[in-house]
Structures are given as structure tokens and as C-alpha cells.
Length: 359
Ligand code: SF4
Ligand code: SF4
Image (cartoon, rainbow, N blue to C red; front, side):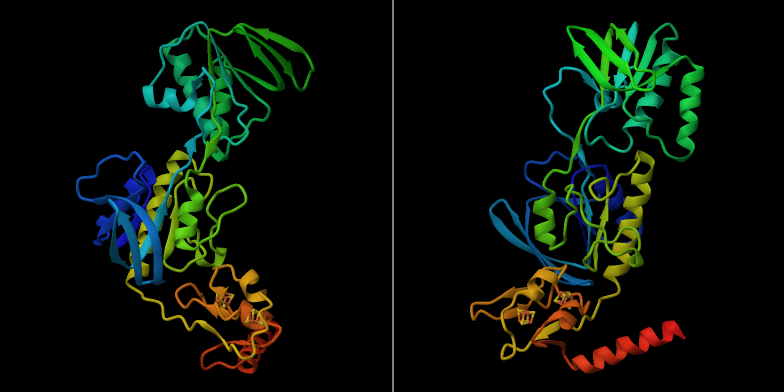
């Protein structure tokens, strides 16, 4: 069974892909979360209390209707997407025109792209929608106003297309908007333009709701901006810092709509494969006699495995330790080792690898 968390588009695609690969998905959404019903997927509303074990053999404790249920799962996919932050603007937003296919506009339309943390797709969606509106109503006048134009790869070509159709781009940081009138200072020329829009469409600041809650339950980390921290590049693009827990959706990285499908399918595929290849990790262990309670291991471990126990000594959680060896090398009291592997043997092995690399 593969645990998939999140109620958005990415979780739907990941669940569908897990079934296609012949495994069983269990979708978990928060009680307050809205989600679409998937006929072949068991979806539970609840809270993940703990996620212990190792790749291929995890135990998920989920509180459902005040009852705690345990599930054995082989791997997990965190498929949480960014959502627009609720704002007090009375303007029409880009996501609402996407949902409602709001294209019957006329007069002067301003698409204002100045949100602090917009979705990566916002500029491309804005240009595509502007072209669509213009095609439907060639008489309307469309301005796209943004401090910085951001498109990627072949999407650059959409700008040329938009300009040929008469859509006007203004690079501006100083934008004043009140009582249906706009004063925009064109950054390159310094000229002030007066625009009276009939319709203003804005982009929205995005947020990753409940990221801290999921990160805590899965014992993984977040970046400072609230997105899920990806695993080391050597592990591949959809990995988290914990073996057997994979990431997809816009909550882990800025993705374009067309990239979300690929990311969700990749994470689902990795999860199915991981669930069939259980990991045997030799976790680090602390010799309490030697431990000086300096907290170095607690601070350096990226997986939150060591903690100070009631005796005031370090204790390493076997389920969370990923055998990276960092604490073994940094412990000033040489109190940590891998079972059956002495510190000297470990150092000799590292020296051998380094020697091979230099030869
Ligand atoms: S780094 Fe070593 S001495 Fe310090 S708390 Fe951890 S085990 Fe104890
Ligand atoms: S070996 Fe690595 S993962 Fe395990 S407790 Fe030490 S620092 Fe954490």
C-alpha cells in the first residue's frame, strides 16, 4: 500500500499512477480539506499522528473520527499543492478566470502581475489567457503590467505572439490604483501612464497550507519559504530527505501545470518501486557511558533522529536514522557508532574511497 497525502490535483494523478503500476493507494486528506472523489481510491479524512519504520515497512498512525487506526505502508508520496492565499482584493484573480473560463471581456483589461510570492506559472498563464481573450474579442485593449517578465524555455515565444496580437507589456514597479484609475510608471523610460481599466485581473500570492504539520508527521524538513525540502540530488528529483518518502506537487518546488503531471507520476513510480525494495539500515547507536550530553548530534542530524532521553543522554531513533554517519564523525566524545562498525573502520573505509577518487 502506498500512502498519498493531499487533496489536490497532484494527489489525484499520483493515486491514478499507483493503481496503473499495480499497487494500492491510500489517500489521506485533512478533515478540513476539500477534495474530489476518486472512484477506485480509498480516501480517508484524518490526521497523521506518526509515520515510523523504514522504506518498505512503514507504519502510519492516523486519527480518523477520533479513533486511531494503524496502516502498514511500503512508501509515501506527499502530494500537497500550493493554494492562493486568501486576499482582501476585490479584483478578479488569475485562478478564478482559469476556473470559470472568464473570457467574455471587453474594453480595457489590465492583467497586473505583482504578487510577492506568485506561482511559477502565473506569467505564462497570464500571457496565454490574454491571447485567448484577444482572440475572442479583438477590439479589447489588454495591458500586462509586471515589474519583471518571467517565462521559461519555449514559453518565451508566447510573448512574441501576444505582442503581435497587440497586447501591451509594461514593465513597472510603481503602480497606483484607486477609484477605477491607474497611474503606472514605466520603469525603463520613467514615463507615467494613465490607464482607466474596465477590468483588472491580478495574480495571487501562493502558500503551502499545513506544510509544517505534514513535515512534522513525516520527520522531514522544510525550506525557509515553507516548501518541502528535497532530498540530495544524487537520490533523484522527487525524493525527500527520508528514504521511502517522495515529494510531488507545487509544495515541493515551483512547477508549471504541465510539469505537475510528470512530477506526480514520477513520485508514484518511485514510491511503488521503493515499497518493493525494503531498506535494511544499520542505525547509529550511542554509548551512554561516553555521551557528554553536548547536543552536537541532536543539532547536526538532518533527520531528527537523536534526542536527549530522560537520563540526559543522547538516544537515536532507529526508524529515523538514515545511517548518514554525520553524528558518528562529529561526536566529540566518540560515543556514537554503527553496530559492528567501529569508528576507526569507518574512517579507514572513507579514506579508501577518497584514495580511489584521487587515483
Ligand atoms: S554528540 Fe556525542 S556526546 Fe554529544 S550528545 Fe551526541 S552522543 Fe552525546
Ligand atoms: S547517522 Fe546520520 S541520520 Fe543517523 S542519527 Fe546520525 S546524523 Fe542522524
